[in-house]
Image 1: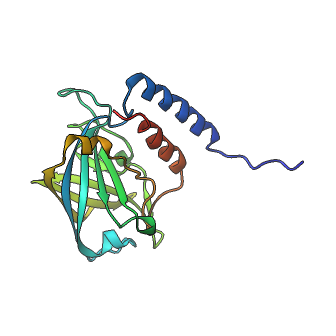
Image 2: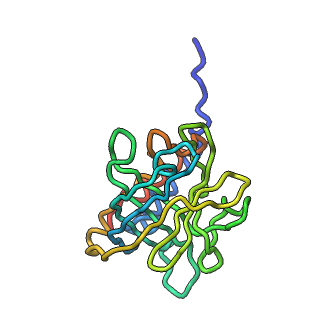
Image 3: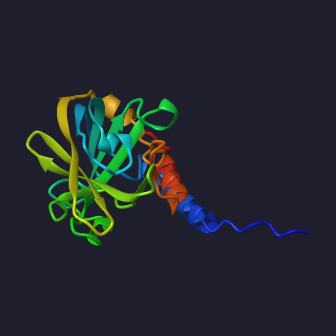
Length: 213
């Protein structure tokens, strides 16, 4: 009888599933980013980039929905990782939404893969890299600037480069914020999260969102 091919992510998936199922049951809410504030927003892209992704390279203006939340839901003034989730309708795979998620992390190379609580972490990072249509590997990021955020991209060992600007608009009703379910692992045709641990991360989000607050 031929041996079945081994799935290297089978054990991580099982452990993640068990831990998050327990967490949602105990907490009665999402494990990650349980409470947040959603706002309408506008993303204006600068153009002139050479990353290999339409969103990062082309000039344009896009409507968006943004949700800002504390990762573990700890009350202020306790330090917590802050998440910035951005939804761009129609820019994802097969014309669906493109969801981008960045969290407070280290700014320099190496530390960009490490979550850091605010205010220690002042630069937002996707932590896990993306692969663009040209084959480049990039991290996505953001920094607070005025009434919004500068949107950033960087190679794994290079400096951050601005590719756009996120301007915040009016807050959305609380029930809208709580109903939002982001899928940052889906990406776009030319902006895909790297395959390494993508399945585990996708499972993490789906399970952490399974119990609605």
